[in-house]
Amino acid sequence: MENEKNKEKKGEANSDLFGLGGLFKGIEKLVDLAGKLEEKGGISKEGEINFDHIKKGMKGIYGFTVNTAVGGEPQVETFGNIKKTPEGPRVDEEREPITDIFDEKNEIVIIAEMPGIEEVDLKIDLKEDILEISAVSNNRTYRKELLLPVKVVSKNLNHKFNNGILEIRIAK
Image (cartoon, rainbow, N blue to C red; front, side, top):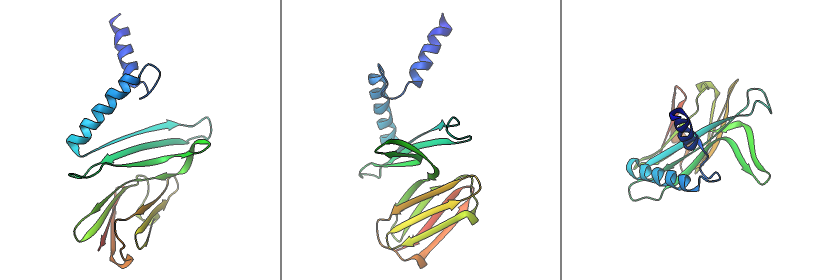
């Protein structure tokens, strides 16, 4: 009997955010996430869906981060390979990496997470205030276009890549 109650509790915890009968649980989770956002200055949530029935080895990855600066507006950024279309969700081979942009006093710093690739796979293209990051390897493809807070010059761009983490620094 006690095991059945534990299974029910686990089932409740795994129910989707706004599932039938789970509206109040969903609201409770949103309040908890907002509290964590306020405490930590940001939150992140991600998940993976297996699409083997469509194509062998295909996985859908989707997530979001919400960051706030002191006194700033919350900024929501999505990442992954599940795209919203008028026809419904679509899974792409190309993933959108999770990124952070920091507007420092003398430079702009961009951090992008792209696990599963090597530095030789990277392509970085900068045109004034638009930065495009892409990478193609044997098993992963990434692409993201970022709008920078100011116009910058590509000759001022430096980057480091280590263990799937790309750090780009652009002097203003």
